[in-house]
Length: 157
Length: 444
Image (tube, rainbow over all chains, first blue to last red; front, side, top):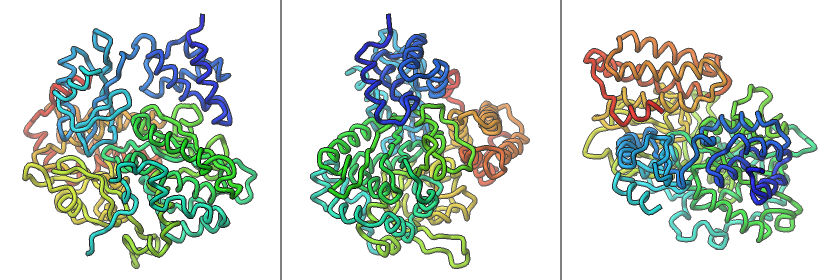
């Protein structure tokens, strides 16, 4: 049985006309699979490679270059919350913010909470330095975050 | 000096500034047909004569870059838009994309006409989810209105824009790293030559331009060369190689200031003016100890250098790498430069792509040495060691393929040469400022 549903395969194929070759669809395909399945497993890599007419190792090479994608041993929780640790956020308490949130939810950066709801990550500069410290919930940025407002955002998820 | 009226950011306070209707009401796309009827070379000449220099960091003259494309190439030729804004402290492109996407799209259309490209790839960092949705909606509006797609405005010109999302890697902001990433590979920068204008994306001639650069192209076409050249800093008559710093620039001010902001000003404003007149001064009534002039890879200005003009030439005159992205990060006098430098080195070590040994190893070792300093068990010789490692990596010493490495070395060089006493005191006092929060991140 295949890991990628026909619907997911259709979405990947829909990217083909945008590029002169199928290899360029590697990142879009990885994003589509990762978003849906919350990880890109070995089996998924093989199936993506088949679709893109690549060797699985080529897809694996690209996937693992970007720390972004999780494998099947470290699947994402329902939501991913990134805490910026780069200079502007660090200067305004970003590191302490991350520590307090990790403590509250019982996770280390990179881990998923026991209830599977959130994966906490540190991020390099999120490009919202005017609202430091900032966090990214999935791909939506929130600025001027305190431990309390972070908890409020997370609890609403 | 009269108050400068923003141009690139002129529309951002309108509630529907991102909509096509609002952009057109303000005159956007009104002369697109006229510009698309001009000869491509004439558009290039306008951009070249305006003196526009790339806003992404290197400051290369934009029009000149366009002329590097081979003449009479059968095509395809590509435009790649660099929206992988990842330099710490930088967020100006996010403003432009979220608040005024059509100004950017019009710039893309004009640039593509000029370089004879029918396909533009906009490489957007994944973290900018809001920018993605705003741009996606704006591009769809343009297709529906005949501003993108086939036979734009009846001129016979065709253009497709593809939005391509990255996956969180700083190196994708390096133009050949971006190209490799777009092709579906790991983002390892390419050895140049060949430069992208000769052989770039999918091995075809490619121009890579930054978001703010393309927004400037729109404004230059509408307002003219004279307007653009009336803003900013004239070339230094004593330096025949200085092309000047013309035009408006978005400065991002963050860190220890009362009002962090993104503000548009003529190139050449000083760091002090930015902090005091635009960012509400240093927070908590403190003084600035150091200021990052243009993203961390440009190094640091000391408190004695705050009157440095932030144009393309200014930061270099006081030992910084350059203007970079004009992201100004203010560091107050209660902060340890050891901690600040550690943060910079950790970033660069995390983001080094690992292709060139001097960068991969150098950034990691510099971070380790700073960890040792911060754990209170270092020696004074460690400072010389840091300088030696920093001096050995980069394009300038000729040991790496791309400039990330120079940008990784520069904050080390600047911090230790400008704040050496503080580092020595730190080492002699055997202080430690490692926090539990940092230990948490160190294990991962």
